[in-house]
Image (cartoon, rainbow, N blue to C red; front, side):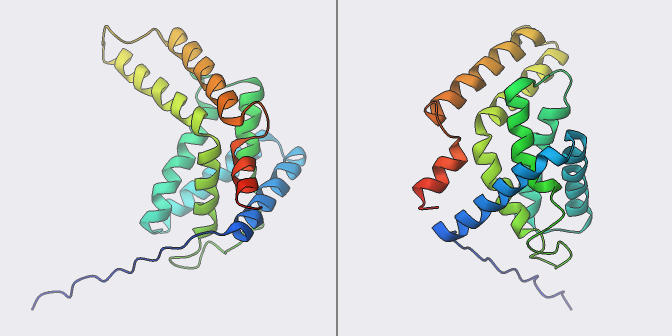
Length: 190
């Protein structure tokens, strides 16, 4: 006798302007509270979420987004990348939500517990796209250097160039004004 085929269920949903406004408010509140938390606490709580999601047999849609969160955390802790100043503060502001002890959906609900975290990771990743893209390119160059690729740029040169590119893209995306996430919420009626 063969084992029955494992069933899966695909669920898709769209967030409307009201939904996005709700997440925007949660992110804003977390950013405001960040002043009473230290940066180490933000990193610690976000790392705990990563560990919890990975050890809880979370659904693939969560695991995929957890990888994005890990990249964001690496940007802050990678000494070679050395993210400083306003860019570092911006990443911390975006990650403050994950240090908030008030979870919208308790993480221990099978299949659904991390959905609020997955949504927020996706929204934050959208906002941090210039930073994430630059950091990934930096990591690729670093690996090429380690492999002895003669075409790889020296690490300091690579970092400086990619961080300048990151800043230019951030300015271009924001139009010199509000951040991308704020623009997204406003264009959605939030």
